[in-house]
Image 1 (cartoon, rainbow, N blue to C red):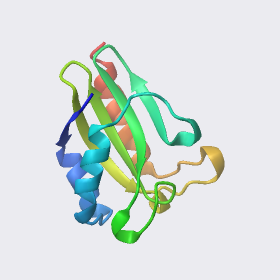
Image 2: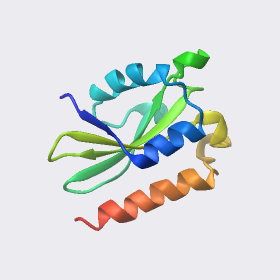
Image 3: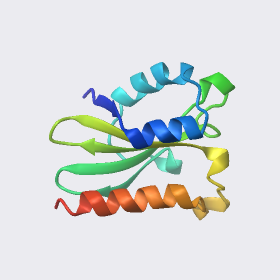
Image 4: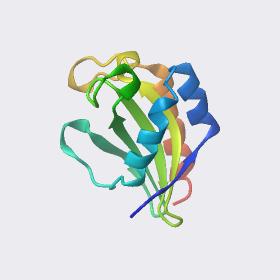
Length: 126
């Protein structure tokens, strides 16, 4: 399945804030169109919540402009609209800015707040 990719205002805000090179987007768009919504090991992609119409995922993307692979690159948060086959990009974060500590250490408040807000918004549609 190919997802129709839509950037949101929130995503564009994070894109600028994280100073992601525009050269990355062409590659990212192609990689995300081919996204398969199955959980993969080692947090390569993780489902945060799902309901009958929407799923929220986090996936890793490389930062080709800075020559960083997926493990040290970017984390993208998106909503899958299962009815219309649309991927709504919500945020993008540099791994180094998430302040990971060990296996469970996401401590970036803005990142956590985005996930919490998305969960509340879309879980109300059940």
